[in-house]
Amino acid sequence: MIPRRKFRLKLRSRTLILGPRTLIMGVLNVTPDSFSDGGNFFSQEKAVHHALQMERDGADLIDIGAESTRPGSLGINAEEEWSRLVPVLAALRTRLKIPISIDTRKSEIAAKAIESGAEIINDVSGLKHDPRVAEISARARVPLVLMHMRGGPQTMQQKPFARDALKDVSQGLRASLSIARKAGVANSQIILDPGIGFGKSYAQNYELLAELPQLAKLGFPLLVGTSRKGFISKTLAQDEKLAPSPQPAGIAAEKKIWGTAATVTASILQGAHIVRVHDVAEMVSVVRIADCILNPTLAPKN
Image (cartoon, rainbow, N blue to C red; front, top):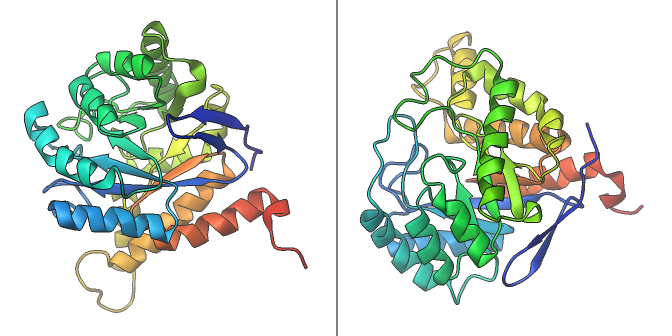
């Protein structure tokens, strides 16, 4: 367990203070094929309702994505991605009181989303797909999340995994940082994400959570997204096989939430500043307790 460094992240509408407490980023996938909730919020009405509900539940940020990057996904063109995003962004721009992050690998989408009210760019490719995303961030002066992905969505779970996951992630993030800095993105506007589940073995995901303090040494705030990831389901499925009584096929959503809660807690105690989750209402309680463990001064007074 390590104390978190404090950072100031300048958005167009406000300044976010990272460190005193963990911020919760709620996931909104307006896709038909995302790994966990694909199709659930594909319609504008459902997407808007869910975003507003996550805000009521306690989310500090909403991360909206319209292109699935699950293992094996083929991707879509910018025109299709924007057609999914624009009605949702338009509807939320005046109704949502918390900042919107845009989950995209394309500079064209990033630019349009910022014009439509988004205040953070979240690039899961770490600028490998389209380095011009960094130029958009620099020009608009909006924060940029750089995530590590080994390979691409089509190949990331098929390629040989790195022998040393921490070294691979550190080197990959440094390469992304170099691109961002050359484009003019200020250090104070960069957030790093180790990319849990993106081109890592199940064991390596746990290893990276344990080694987050090493990534914190890079000197940037950390965002961690473990919510409903495959390594959690696989671990719980293994436990079910060992159970003495027959179990239903698949892993119940409730069990995934418990598994996610454990990884969210670990992430916070190891230095994460932001956690990206699907189940905001449940994770608000988890984050509250984890923050008090990390910093007992946040606990209620007797």
